[in-house]
Each structure stands twice: as C-alpha cells, then as structure tokens.
Image 1 (cartoon, rainbow, N blue to C red):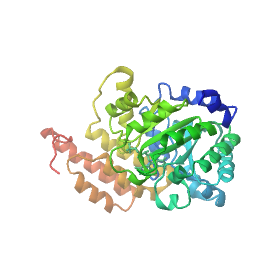
Image 2: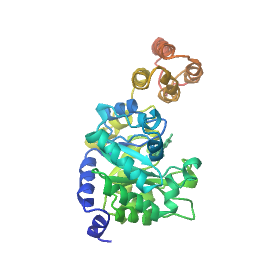
Image 3: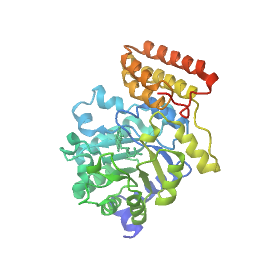
Image 4: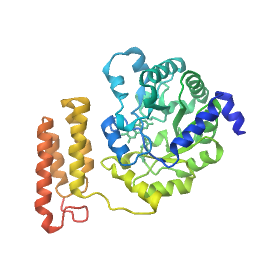
Length: 358
Ligand SMILES: Cc1cc2nc3c(=O)[nH]c(=O)nc-3n(C[C@H](O)[C@H](O)[C@H](O)COP(=O)(O)O)c2cc1C
C-alpha cells in the first residue's frame, strides 16, 4: 500500500498528523506506557521529569464519560499535571459515534494539553473484552477501523491505536490489523508483543513489532518486556521502532527514563538510584498523590512503595508495615523511619540490592 493511499483514505490530515507524531517522538522516544491503576498524574509527572518523552493517561471509558459526564471516576483519570502536558489521552470503547463525541469533548475541554487521542485495542481483561472493547477489537477489524475513522473526523489532534500481537496463537494478525488502522487514518501505532491470550505472561515477541514497522509508514511504538535502559536501546535497534514504551519497568523506577536517555543520547551507563533516593522518591510520590487525589489515596501508594523498595534490605517487613498504615501521616513516618534504618546500617555498606538479608 502506498503511503498516500494509507494516509489519505482515512483523513486528509492523516499525513500531517503522522508527521507531527514523528516530530513529537524524535529525541523523545522513550515513553511511559498507560497502566490502569498505576500511571496516575503524579507518577506521570515524575517520569516526565526523568525524561519520559510522552506520557499516557490510564485508559478512560468512553461509555463512562457518556453516562456519567460529571462523575468523578472517569473524569479524574483525565486530570493531567502541568509538568507532563501535552499528554496522550487513551480511551476505550466499542461505539464509534460515542467514542468520537467523547474524544471531541476531551479535546475541547483540555485543549493544548492533549497531545493525541490513543485508542486502547489491547486490554485483555474479561469485563472489557466481553463488551467487544479493548483487545476484542482485534477480532473485529471492521469495527476497529470505523472507530478510528470516526475519531479522525471528529478531533483536531492525531489519533493513534495501541494493540497486541494478536488475539491468540490462532489469530496473529498484528500486521494486517496495523495496515487497516493506518488505512483508517491512524497517525501512529503502538504494538504490545503479546497476544490477548497471554495477558502479561511469557516473553513479548519483539519480532511482531518489527514486522509491523516494516509494513506501515506511520510511526511505530514498541511495547513489552522493557525493564532497563539496555532493553530500550535493544528494542529500538532490533525492531526499528520509532519509540519504545516502558510499562512495568517503570514501576518504582522512574529513573529508567534518565538511564535510557543517557544511554541513547551519550552512550553512557549511569548509576542506578541509591536506596536513599528510592525512599525519598516514595515519599515524594506519596505526597504528590495525596495532594492530587486526597488523603484517602495513601492507600494506593502501598503497591508503589513495595516497588520502590523492592530488593532492599528489610523490604518484606516494610511491606507488611506499609499495609498496616491507616493514613498518610503514618505512611510517611514509616518511610522516614525506614530511611533512618537504612542510614544506621550504612556502616556495613549493605543497603543496596547487592547486600540482601531479606
Ligand atoms: C497494571 C497494568 C495496567 C495496564 N493498563 C493499560 C492501559 O490502561 N492501557 C493500555 O493500553 N495498556 C495497559 N497496560 C499494558 C502496558 O501498557 C504494556 O503494553 C504492557 O505491560 C507490556 O509491557 P511490559 O511487558 O514492559 O510491562 C497495562 C499493563 C499493566 C501491567
């Protein structure tokens, strides 16, 4: 398929939008992947500060926005922090008109803060898939294409799609699906190299990403098994992708963006954060989350704290104590105490992952 056909069939602006995504990614090609329940605005802001090129909101239900326009649930997911904007907004659904109306409303409401509208066609969760949303759209490329066409016709920003290698081993259709999405007017494509059947298990197939990259003209973003700066460089190299998304590799580790940029830009391998930096970041993250979402949000820090201190001395005992905290003040005090504990042990030189006694 020629680039002109691909670009023009979905939308006359397809080419310029695709070029603008390419420009957005150039030199900013290490992105924070959308992760529901993890990548809230405060964490996205931290990752951006460490060098994430683009951040994505957690997936937001078009139906949720439609039926509950003033409700806090879906709306809160759209709150972006000033330090991360413009930010990619990810929506999901299966009703093209409803999705287009909601996406247009998002663009109107948030204006320049919206870098692009991304459509989730990769979520494997049963309650999403059973409504023909998320990765179920990979089994229904006609509907998926209609969604993209409606969105492209309705919003002033680029429309992109995030999908998987396929539905299962009997339907490995990433390449055909990618071409259909490009044809429908998508300006960039993100590919997670696992099937829906795999959920998040097993190795991600980077070759599926490389195949998509070879088949389309729009920018391609690779996702799956990126846990270090070296993985970032290797995925870019092995797949030819224009950008890479970091997902679980960023949990408790926003420094991965700084490390990846140092490696990509200067060929440097920089030191990982010290245990003290990790505890300090957990405190900063908790404070920002409570400020953003209210006092009750301290609860949502439990998993983040576990990730920040993973592999550090005393981490398992700490995890139990964090889970017993009843408010933010208690959580913060516990982190201060833990920092002191690490500091007291410093004479052994033994607070890093290398010296574990867990
Ligand atoms: C807890 C969690 C939540 C996720 N939520 C979303 C989401 O809202 N939208 C989406 O497109 N992908 C979501 N993903 C998928 C990731 O963006 C990414 O594609 C996937 O985790 C593969 O990358 P990894 O192997 O490096 O973790 C989620 C993944 C995890 C682990």
